[in-house]
Image (cartoon, rainbow, N blue to C red; front, side, top):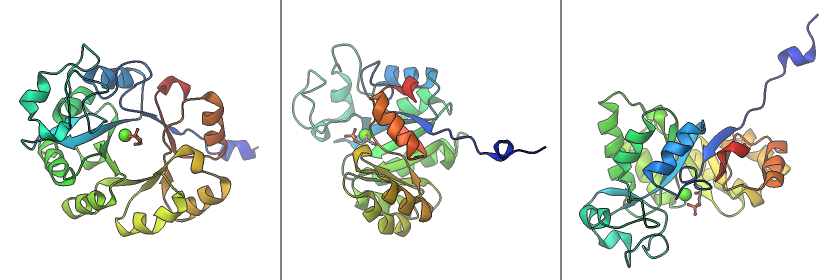
Length: 236
Ligand code: G3P
Ligand code: CA
C-alpha cells in the first residue's frame, strides 16, 4: 500500500559555493571556481566590480591590499593593470567572462553585484553569452545594492534575482516583489521559524550566507532553507 513516505518530498538544499570554494582555494579565482564545479556545487557565487575601463572583474574587496600585491581601490585600475597583480601570490584576478567560461554551464553562476554601476555591464555580458548558447537560467543576480537590482531588472525582465540583506530578512519581501525577485539571501544568523515562514508564504526562496560550521548548517536544514552558501561545499 501507499505510505506517507512514498509521497514525501525529499529535502535537498542547493549547495552554493561561496566565492568558488574558498574554504579550499583562494576566493574568486578561476581555480576556486573549478574546484567548486568539481565539488558538484549547484550554484557558485562570485563578486564583481566594474573597473576603470569598463570591464567586470571578479574580486570581493573594494581595496586590493588584503589579497593582492596591489594598492588602493580596484575601480581605479584598468583590466590590464589588474591582470599584472597576483592574488595570494599565485593567482590572477579573473574577468567575469573567464569565470563564465570556467563554469561552462556545469553550475548556475550567482553574480553578486558588489560595486556600483555593475548591473548594466553584467546584463550585457549575459546577453553576449546567450548568443553562444547560455540562457538566463544559467545565472542568478544578487546584491546588497538594491538600486543595482532595479537596474538589472530593467535590463532583463527574466533573469533570477536574489535580494541580499544583512538585517531582518522579512523586511526585504516588499522590495523582492517589486523587482520580481525569486529569492532573499539573508545573513544566516537572522533566520528563525517565523521569518522563514513569512518568506516562504511570500513565494520566495531562501539562500542564506555564509554557513560553514556543521551546527549552523544543521540549523538551516531544520529551517528548510532552499540552499546554503558555504565556503565548504562538501558540508552541505
Ligand atoms: O552572496 C552572499 C555573500 O557572499 C555576501 O557577503 O561579504 O561574502 O560578499 P560577502
Ligand atoms: Ca559575495
